[in-house]
Image (tube, rainbow, N blue to C red; front, top):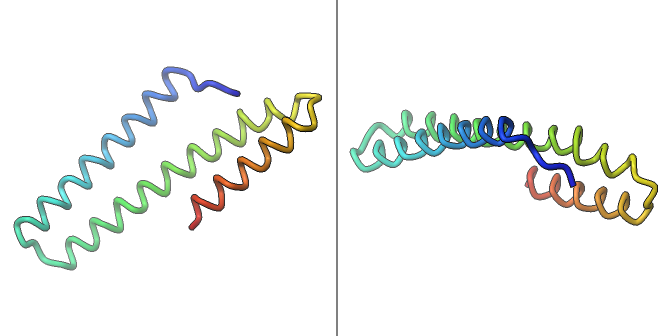
Length: 94
């Protein structure tokens, strides 16, 4: 299984930290009775940011982890990795 570099992990963690900060600001907006339209717009922004993070992770998984597995001679490993990918995609797009 492919391991991500410390730089890749730091980049993903930083992106997630920004998403968490944004989600916390939505909580504050709700607590202070901000306009519902403004809150919904911010919720849409967080949802979009999470989707983009998921796309980045999925792309890296396909580019790195999948390529490692498919360079292997082990057909069982290839089938398992493909099944895991399909499961992840199904859960991601749900």
